[in-house]
Length: 81
Image (cartoon, rainbow, N blue to C red; front, side):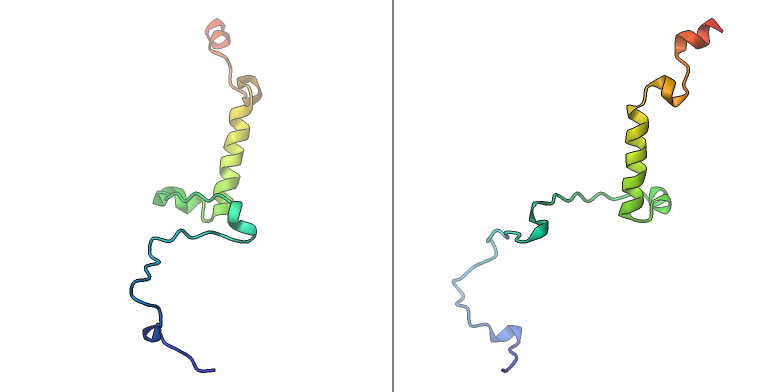
């Protein structure tokens, strides 16, 4: 079996596959990915995707708590004191 280089292409010039849609196959095909760019100060605290996800999940849990569960006094309580 001989190796062929990219210049030994036997496809006809009229075949243009540049506009062909790429269809993902396999386990990851239904997985949605989102890429975001972190500012340098944030990236220093969250060095990898796992750390970012853990931090965001903590924030989500905190936001779902009531103000009393977070230890925050309501404005009416603080005005009465």
